[in-house]
Length: 473
Image 1: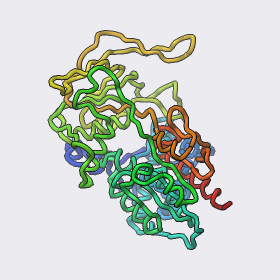
Image 2: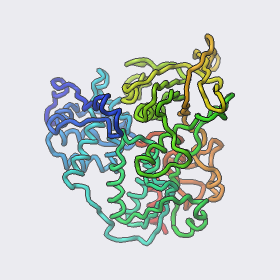
Image 3: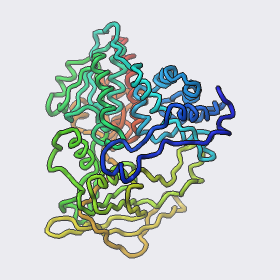
């Protein structure tokens, strides 16, 4: 360690966000950056703990103390090399990861953890700027062919690693652009799509082949893909969004959040979204669902020119700052206020939507019922009970951001003959092994809807299993 007492002398300093009045006017990334000197000082705050809980909490197992130490000493390139031993695309996790590493940082006991996520992004941007990231095609090819269905974080990691092992990799993507959730689901103000494009250019230069606008099982037969490869990787993500089947659901103006978010990303890419483009301009927007997807809808609605935005959640408001039920070093269930919330949003909690109200076929509002949650003594389960009078929230556009119920398309799995759970996830081991020896799975298709960083870790495990299998053939 360069300065073992830095955490006592240097306070946590975040780069922060661009001013609200400025960032609401565009889709540029909201986060700012620190200069290199400040970034090195922030890295020096790492205590190099005897037990690095940050490492324990990271799904990828990133070696935080090692690269923080190198960064604090100005060894940026070495820091990047240590980082990429475990994280193939740190420019993604450095932007959209909720940083479980920071929540487990010993300094988080005082709510001042090392700025691990920001440091990660800064190291990676320096690597791109300095030209340290260059295509490295494999020196020899194995003659084995791998097909990857899905180009989200799990699929990209698997393709990247398997190609570097010398296998010929083809990635199939049903959308017109590569990136999956990174491209279609995450707003540009959180992840500029040029960040994805520059990494894709590297993968292409290394030999990965991408086939876009092609849904396996519809545009190309499953049998054709199976016959063209020695191993098939499923990284098809979560497919079916949770719906809200209450009275009035058929009214116009009620849409799934992903249709709203992906449509905006398509427009920014100069493409026409499927169906009529959704816009919040001049509308009262109601977002149902209090998670990250709902927050993304809030930020997008504000940028499109919504007159007001309301976000409601079925669960009660989490505690602020501390939650005794999720103590350090576990990921805390506490109130999270995103950059989008800061831009303007009325947040309400413990509300159940009972029906939608409309006029001439168009939604005009949602009736909500306040509820309370209590623990059932005999089972310990949380029980929801109505309390108080229902009321109406006016809305011209309702966005459903309530998660996913069926992660994968059962039709594709039936065609392959792969076993899957009743809830739609593929039956597989943690290494991505399925009921068929030539078919492997990773990401949300086996985990259910989860984090980008977990999908990347899953893609890495699947790639290792595929490579081990191909070595026996």
